[in-house]
Amino acid sequence: MRQSVTLALTAGEPAGIGPELCLQLALEKRQPGVVVVACKHLLQARAELLGLAVELVDWEPGNHAVTGPGRLSVLHVNGLASTDAGRLDPANSAYVLETLSIAARGCLDGTFDGMVTAPVHKGVINNAGIVFSGHTEFLQELCGVERVVMMLATEELRVALVTTHLPLKDVSAAITPERLSQVTRILDSDLRRFFDIEHPRILVAGLNPHAGEGGHLGREEIEVIEPTLDKLRQEGITLTGPLPADTLFTPHWLDNADAVLAMYHDQGLPVLKFQGFGRAVNITLGLPIVRTSVDHGTALDLAGTGKADAGSLKTAVRVGEQMAKSAKKSK
Ligand SMILES: NC(=O)c1ccc[n+]([C@@H]2O[C@H](COP(=O)([O-])OP(=O)(O)OC[C@H]3O[C@@H](n4cnc5c(N)ncnc54)[C@H](O)[C@@H]3O)[C@@H](O)[C@H]2O)c1
Ligand SMILES: N[C@H](C(=O)O)[C@H](O)COP(=O)(O)O
Image (cartoon, rainbow, N blue to C red; front, side, top):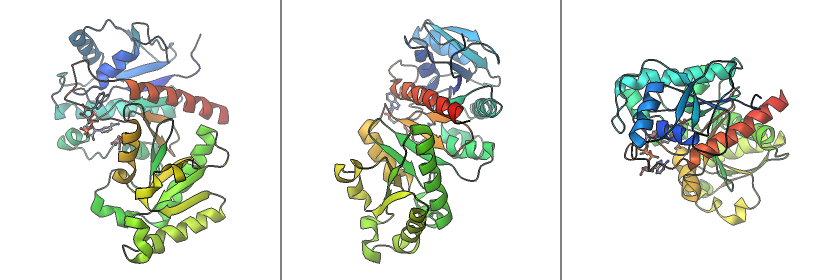
């Protein structure tokens, strides 16, 4: 019998912990319908290094996805240059991006119901001469959409970002009425669509200390954020803010909210990761496909040691399955 959803799982940076986390899924009792999109020789080598008894099963479209116990479906991708755990090799970068393209195209053409990504190393991809900011931006371009939203979530907290992988010096200029409006609308509509929240309540952080202190510590709140939020409220979106970011993440506000919208990466994500690193999921909202990911990076220091924790990958697969089911229902 076919599983209700089939997810493509990219194994990410070959030198990182992604390949072994994918193998760990095959040792679980629970059997999610995932197909690992990766070089099978890499998975084989990592399984042998760690002494993991996992049988890799070649997968092709139309086949049942086999995940566990002790078996793993693999869609083999060519082009890997080296398989060393812990040692980055720029020659692997084109292969890494090819795994992402195969998974995303498979979602767009209906082969897969969604994709889950293990971590990639942004630095080594750029060192190979390929401009790459992250999966979020890569998938936005591949899917041809104007705006997407990065949201990380635990059971207790959801944090979405107005800007993603941007140097801090460029953040202020990027917070325009257009971007803020697009991001807020996507967040509101995807909270309804994927998380069954009828009337999402969103807390919006200011950009400056104390949300600008009435204009004395920055004017973005007065000139951009407040007027934009006022317009969005007229569309029926429930927004509170702009709030000072230092006190926003307290029960007083969070207890009556469904998500926080932070202005930039390190305003929101350190709080989320402090609260739930290792069990959170990274979700790209606004795409025509379902995409979830882990909350951590490539952890080169742990690759090949068997010490990496698969908690976040399991969460990403579980949330990916739920979102894929919701997407199917709403079609
Ligand atoms: N989804 C993604 O693709 C993604 C997410 C975050 C970071 N990254 C990339 O990863 C690379 C390394 O980033 P970093 O060093 O800042 O963060 P990191 O998450 O790789 O490592 C931070 C610390 O957390 C530990 N850690 C990470 N994952 C773990 C796990 N599953 N189990 C146990 N411990 C774990 C590491 O050993 C390290 O001490 C960068 O290139 C970054 O851009 C990718
Ligand atoms: N910003 C993410 C984080 O800190 O967890 C991470 O860099 C991954 O981003 P992508 O999903 O865009 O690769």
